[in-house]
Length: 98
Image (cartoon, rainbow, N blue to C red; front, side, top):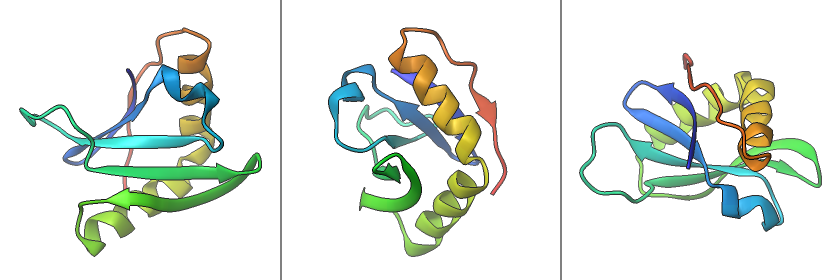
């Protein structure tokens, strides 16, 4: 897994095997969680064009809104980090603000 960014209590991750999925997305994990499963999946594009929206989520509406706003604001950096992950490079996770 390629850790892309940290946002408050969350880690945004790209999974290299997702390279063949129809749309680019990030998986959201809780920091420090003992369970290794994502709590949300967020699309970041559609047809190669920026389109940030929830694919699935177990989070509150407030947490979802915070994540969407942060991903939208830092979209280029996150998209670049996903590209690095898909190339087999190790991305350098960044702290992002909401």
